[in-house]
Image (cartoon, rainbow, N blue to C red; front, side, top):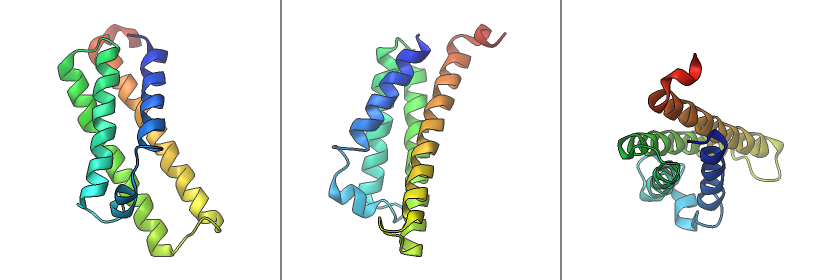
Length: 129
């Protein structure tokens, strides 16, 4: 498995699912815990991670685990950001909105680094020695 390959695929997946495939009803629901839109959005991210992992020749069980972790983390990061933005009434005209968005995206990128490190640890434990 190529580290750069999996990171590239995770970046591509993120760009697609946080961009054009993030539909209005998903955006609307993300700040309300348990609503279908936020769950569907995070679920798409999990499925994308499974596909990216399998394309990088990872074991299907590992791919499922990584996808589940990605979906759960993505859901909670989005929920926290949306809850904060809505509670504080931050709009795109306020710098705090952009700070929250930047923090949200940074946490997603850290998740992809952590998932890649986890995959390497599981599949190639000697990589760290």
